[in-house]
Image (tube, rainbow, N blue to C red; front, side, top):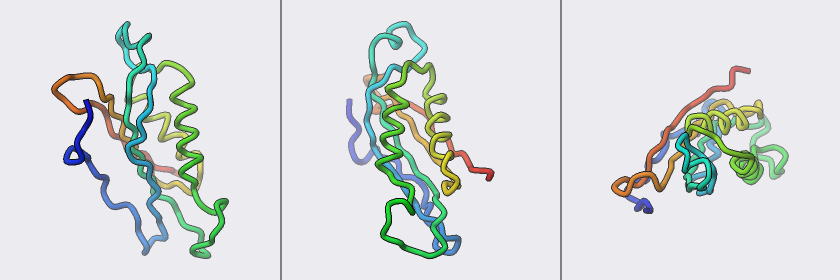
Length: 138
């Protein structure tokens, strides 16, 4: 079952020019993983949709056209793929926490909002899941 565009939930606005915060996001990353507490879920991969919104402190010098000066969404997506491929996880809550933690490893990331949806759980629902928000205390 796939969600129509009318079912998409959009995150609150995160970018904030006054505080030099940019919004870096990855939306609708669909991966297959082993997730769930039921016996079948330990053997049969399931589709999950991952949405990620990060509040990232900008460099005080402003826009610099250098990849090293930004949080790279390709690197973040690759790290998420590696995490999902690393083995079974019981709960979507655990996966969300792990993704938030890997994002917050970068001290420029002030806030990570992570939404995990299992796409094929109920025939009569587009998805089920959890959304969390975590802050960098550093």
